[in-house]
Image 1: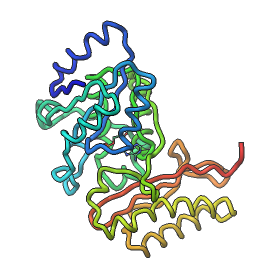
Image 2: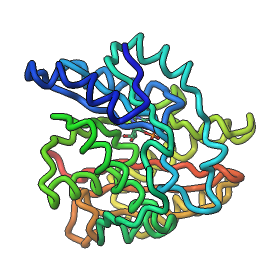
Image 3: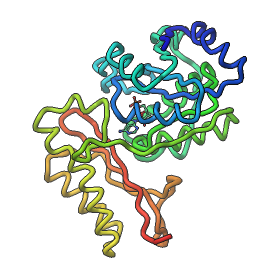
Image 4: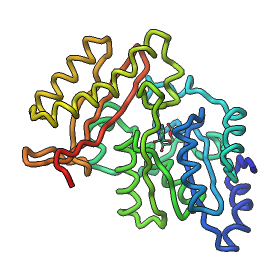
Length: 282
Ligand code: AMP
């Protein structure tokens, strides 16, 4: 496995693979890798000849009061995990390497999809995501790119971006990997105190209970309100508890398929999760 820190170095490393018409897979991450990230790499290995994993904590997707400075950076540990899953190239550029001329004055903005959920509570977050993903796709030029459904809205934004800009890459979204108690794995889980970690699984539990009560016939509005109350009572600060269609449109009363979304804070740690719900049988 090679580690490249420059755009030119990566291009040189990929040159032979490209000339030999190898299938290139790409997994963009911010590092501090866990089983969620590694599951993406394993899937990439199944259908690609060469897998590139980027590790870059992207400043443009963090708000001024968010955790950019404190975000866990664990390159050595990440490298070991990536060797073990058969990653071929790590791309770990510096901020200066990715943003040579600051401030960046080019905007890539996916509208509509970014006006709800995390886009509403984290202004400019998805502009930062769209910018870095576009840059990384141009640098790596992968055939396939792998993303986690845990960041459901991010997947929708990236797919839209790829479609609207005719980017030559296929986006593959993979299921959320969870701890045994149901908590979605996240690099931010390391911020949780022992007490906070103990109540965090309630996020997923409340989503599963919401799904069950929906199947029992309760209305979506009631279920969302109950879920919110329950999480609040347990000590979470609610950012949102909402439902949208799988294409992130508003749910109509006739819709039988939708996604439940939760974003909460435990202390200063923001956690998100979602659950796809289908009320009809195939
Ligand atoms: P991040 O490092 O948080 O930017 O995440 C990098 C990629 O890993 C994104 O596509 C995430 O959706 C994905 N990812 C993060 N956590 C999980 C998880 N628990 N299960 C599956 N994929 C995940």
